Amino acid sequence: MTPETINQIKEALAPIAEKIGVGKEERRQARYGECLSSAWRQYSSAWDSQCKLAGKEADCTLPKYRYEPVEADYVREKEMCLAVYKSG
Image (cartoon, rainbow, N blue to C red; front, side, top):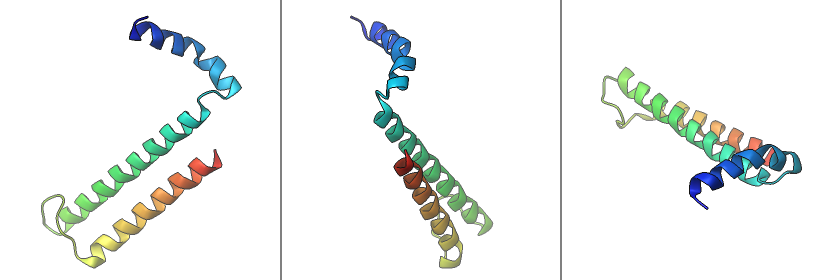
């Protein structure tokens, strides 16, 4: 059986598997990973925006008053991801 055939079978069975709960944990983990990735992208973008506001290049060193809000938002986003993951 080729990988393509296997993928076709998986796609065909996905609706049935979802109804009976097969792969539910894998989907939860994937959503959690996607959420964390999104939180990281937002954090990185916010950090770079603060660098730009400070007249610096991206990925710069920021003073505490600029990085603390960015860090706090990142922590909240990660906590939200975990809460959603735990809720199922």
